[in-house]
Image (cartoon, rainbow, N blue to C red; front, side, top):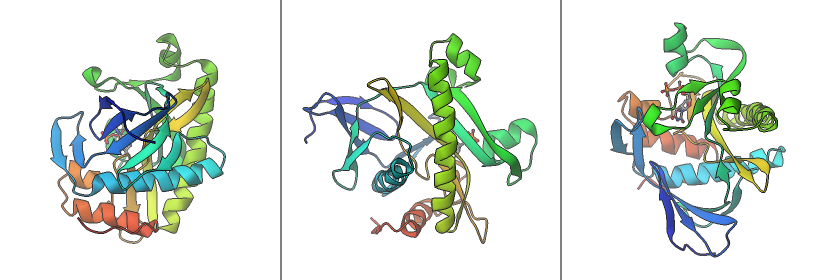
Length: 239
Ligand code: UDP
């Protein structure tokens, strides 16, 4: 498997074609952005951590019955994945109030929710990823009813799997964002699961161990990413 021409460069990854039309290679960058690209920076070593963590967790998710785009880790930063057509929805699952949810609803960060919630944002940078509901998604032809039902089912399954995996690592899964794609007509999990896309708080101290350290200028950003990776059992050298 080798990289052919670059298909796309996003905020956190580059994507390359391969000789197989069903396979892409993603290459994770250290670049960090927040607030729809307004805040820019770099988290040294993040690309390798997010790549390896995503691959580890996608394999666990797959074993638990949710199909994913993961094929094979090629090196620290690069992975072969199934080429999907991304469903333009950011799917957010929450266990505990934080971030925009806390602000919008006036609920203190850290408040445990009575049950997990799900929400959809329309993936559109120009519009700032507006919050929509499943009726909007259908009305805009972003996904069919069947696809939305599958996405909801898989998203809560992913939550159950990740909650357990992170708890074993002494981390509380507050909320996370995932994306799905279509592969030969089937919905599968795509994109990533990492401290860029999850809120993870230390079980004992409550310390934030995720991208909020970058968003909110809390310091020790690299250290937090490394600590999360190590607790999941990955061997990470500080770059
Ligand atoms: N999130 C993400 N990408 C986005 C927006 C949110 O990965 O473009 C993740 C974020 O890291 C958090 C969860 O989704 O784990 C919920 O984020 P929220 O809606 O609270 O938005 P925020 O307060 O981060 O803007």
